[in-house]
Length: 114
Length: 117
Image 1 (cartoon, each protein chain N blue to C red):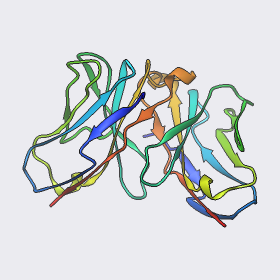
Image 2: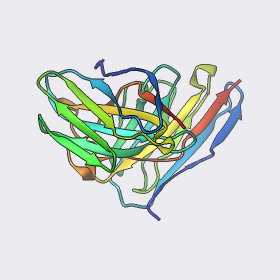
Image 3: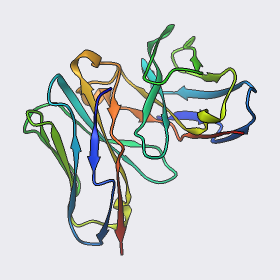
Image 4: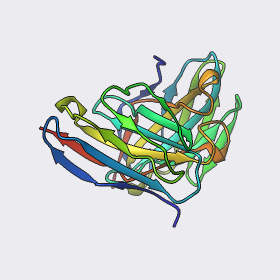
């Protein structure tokens, strides 16, 4: 069973502050990493799909970096707003499973306090 | 509107009573998958389908069945539900599969909260 870990499990952020959190995954057999945002009572929605070492993706105030050699990805939220409150999920795809099986981490739950 | 539709949103049932959770997508996606979400655990894959009449087991398939007779529908069947199947279930789809392109990101349904008494 693949080990995909996210830390911290939860964090509280003051509105306007920036924050970041980590997704760790096996560095061998890397194929792709997905990030999803899951708001309470809604469906998870895709943020980023990342494949290249050193890649950086950005969507509004949210960005992500990828280090495939050491097996981690950071998600950054700049100037957090209450609407950023959600659980952020990463999902790892290894080469052998390409096309059919993402392995999800446990998520980082972010609460932005006004 | 492009979407993945799951029904029902909430379901309470008793042990042993067969049930089906429906999932339908209107995006002509080839790939569909079922996940369950339990506290403290990540989304775990139950079954997936790469195309019509092609299904395969995920990580936790025991106690579940699926079928893919039409491209748009991928129902999850619990023949004899047990309390350990109490969970939040998500159906998801993508254009071709799960990979490294933006076409391979997952679209999720709204979830089904199942309680088996």
